[in-house]
Length: 270
Image 1 (cartoon, rainbow, N blue to C red):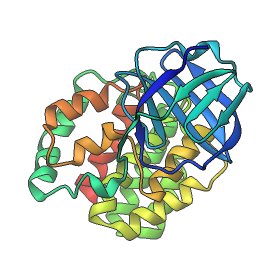
Image 2: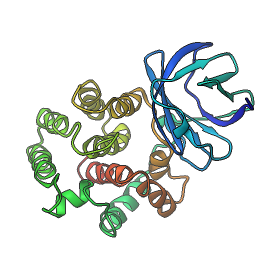
Image 3: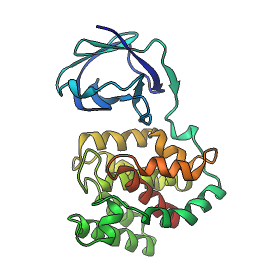
Image 4: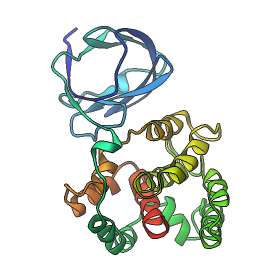
């Protein structure tokens, strides 16, 4: 079978070998578990995930069913007999520390434009939509969570804020629920502006069992210092903000938009 090329990979170290299984597959993304950790193969044009690898071309990963074997060797990943070569892969950092810090100008720009930007065309049943449209099935839970966040901030009570954030874990549909994406956005700002508080919030969220395993892995990776390049670009003063917002906000059904909502909350209150 002809080998497909991994053209870009994250900087996270893969072991010299390993045996795993496919977790979930989509047309342009395949998640697999190896040595207890989740990794992703992504089609060309997709954003590099914190533990991801970009495959040249646009392979259709839906042909790989959940549960099929994944084998890692010294220079390739083999999924159900299909090799993906790692030999020529360029390494791109998904470390949060390599994409910042956001300077005060960047924070000011975000504070000035993000609220209006998020209101333009919010995805149905995402965080913003649920907060502003009572017809959303998630509106009651999102609004309860929002009120708890606001009350904690007004009181200046960090313990209450951590508890309020924990209540958002697993809130919403999909592989990464809206509440988790919101928390990730909060953390990415707090990582630079209030790192101890951000770590407390995410440590509590990442170790809970009330969300999906994909989302839990996303939060755990962030706590370890890694995140999607889509989101890191929003805070990186070396990137064009409007372009970064457009790319991040379009990710998933509402995931990117939800993450930006969390960033806005942290920018306004962090």
